[in-house]
Length: 559
Image (tube, rainbow, N blue to C red; front, side, top):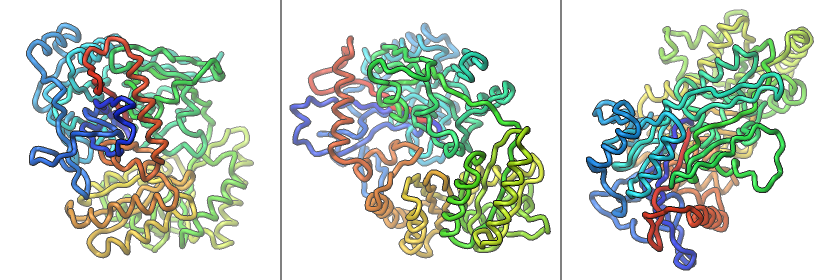
């Protein structure tokens, strides 16, 4: 969800070499949400795949990645250049700061970078990449480092480029163009949400990691989040962006127009590309006016079929005001009700009691937080419709129990439960996380089959965005265990592929899943991605660090 991944795709094989070459994927530097992967990202790799004790293993079936010998090692002259460019404060070599930047949010991926750079503007990003390209230095962009797939941290000793100092809001037009926000990539999502709230507008994106994730990483991973049901993906909200290519070339696509059919709309190639084409440095995004009232219902259904039917009824009868339709299963509810991560003991139970004081967190039910936005002027009408919908849902048996938030504090508590699940899982022990898109009717089948597959060795916890078919599948265990992982993979990927789902709904591929892309994309599609990537680098001038078969730094960003 929120870091940048810099994917250092070094191998740019000629079409002559690539033809007939098996697509194996060995990744070297992926960022959870921003690191520049230094070796490759979904392409043919002819000489990395030998196993070695010095290699690193990231999958259930050992896949070894090695530092590409074409990359240079940081020298004192390099440090001097960067200090001249960025100043002393922009060049970080402190061991404590580097340890945090080298480690992903889950603590599963760790690099060994000795250098963190903090540019303050696009020109400095351009100069850094231009210099690194000339010196064959691998880099990995990083933002909030909140990603969940190993895409935002170095794999080896890549130079970390952190855009966190690029956090200016450049403009906001709430009169003429109706809510177009232009800002730099390092702006923290929560700060943008607060700014827009004060202006009477709403950010179309909201994530549990909003306090740390940055908008450049959000765009680079096409982060989904809690409001996608109402406002759609960032492909619809982002009007333009600015990006820097691997050789330092700045692409100005920072338009604010709703319509522009002059050739290819190239911004869409960068949205969700995880930095494989460049580092996003600025974004223009369309923000809708904020409606004056909001409310949340926390409902319980007896089975998953009822959840599906309730979603259909909600879309039919509340489509105009429905903005989120989330899902937590009984194991997820048990986790939050038995954890004190919410700040006060038993807070999880207290906030989800109905008006009679009955607690429904302990029943074997599926819980559904639903959010509704409506204008104050028509609030009474919408509330009447909402209450009628809830009453009908209970009487028809779709809803077993539930509660409608009575004030903003209780509404916030409902969301705190949903957004706090990743932290609760981390505190419960080791967790294997999978972010999947599946046909709605098949979504919970995977959860039930995974419980049979895993057995008593671990607990399967499921939640996600039911409104858009996004399942967050979590396998929680006391400690990481290769035997448990072997039961999960490749089963989870094969099951998803067989049911025509996606192995990455919103988190991206990162280091975790880059070699698994074939489960969601056909060989022809992957081949086209590779060919397009090569075409971009063929067109770049001043690629002094290239030979016939290799390109230097390929970036990969994530939220």
